[in-house]
Length: 258
Length: 258
Image (cartoon, rainbow over all chains, first blue to last red; front, side, top):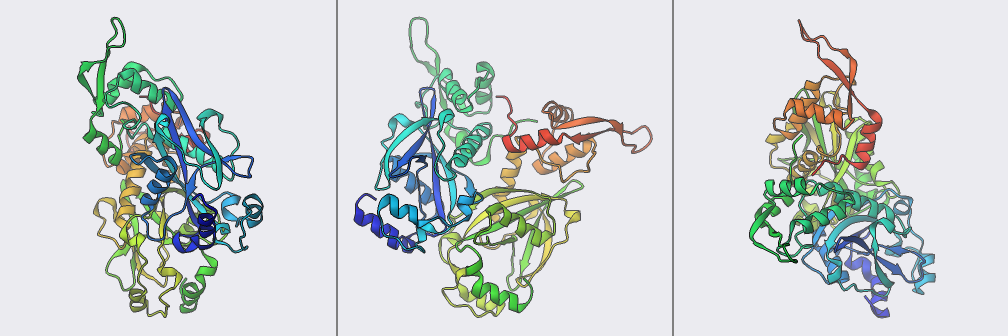
């Protein structure tokens, strides 16, 4: 959505194409070389930053909508993408929003009862991508983007800080019972590489020996009869994910012992 | 909603009071004496059973709506209640529903474009209650209710089997990183009692010694200087939840080691 014509069509006729009262907010986590970041957009005319998002077409399955919105923004299609929460409690989500601001910021003619200013609940999805591979699209409403470090997120527009906090909490708890990393590591990786990924996401140190042992015992990764040469006397073994086991664990969860 | 007048008002004017396109489906787990069950309702005129649910008022915070709907149905207000998923993918959730069936079953006059027959996504919530304490309300649309054992759920209406499966999976994974039991056990309980609760929910055996040790180590429960006499030479120690730690773990999750 870039031309003024497209935007006017969206504002005035979008309610015929999209479900009203509902949107999708995407928390896009980017991992690369031991750094975990989140994609934020700078809205035109606003001081602050916010999450990317979009709307669901009238007859579009919900998860198709989430993938479509992410592809439109990042051009990536083979993503780890997951629902994590519906935001419908904050005053911003309960009261109808004001169209005045919108008219001022974007110089668009909108009536007070325009669909974009009805109460809108947001379904939160989070994605995990390698941010070095993403080319982000901006549009009519957004002037720039930036990958922010997760522990330095600024105050965000609307209730988007709640969404970031909840997504991060969900990711960090979930990493104990769902595998991650398939699209964040090379096909064949070393134990230090996967260990760093987990440490970065959890923001804490993990015992390297126990960590690797657990992933192997769970059957999620397997040791290859192949090494990578990274210097004199240093050639660690390579590992890879066991695709079937990984998919199964994604569906059913990894059960720890009590 | 019981009288024909109330029902007609709901059908014809409900779109002024409630958000359209969205509903809440409640999976109510009931635990009592080592049995885990789910509350299902028998809809009038339908062969099958379905989940209880309801709609969100226009300016009602989402979680208030979930608590209100559950209270209307079970008369319980101090519940463990939690969002677990938004259902918006099944064909039933993508296509608009047909009002014909509705006219036939309930003998209500509805127009084809009535709000109840627009595409509706369902936000799934699950609750944990002691089913021996619940008095279930039926209404105009439902003729009876029954607590079904979780491993004997019949084929349900709409996509409600998906909701039950997902709720159960979420509960079983979550029990490893969130405490449960506060409203399902007596204030002071024995280790065998909490052990049975966890075994019943997980539907598997847990090592009694390790299980108790873990809960105590996590600080979730504490041993009291008090015993319960249950027979000659049998007087097990009583335990109670550490309320602060419990609340904190509910918010932040219990982190296991890798």
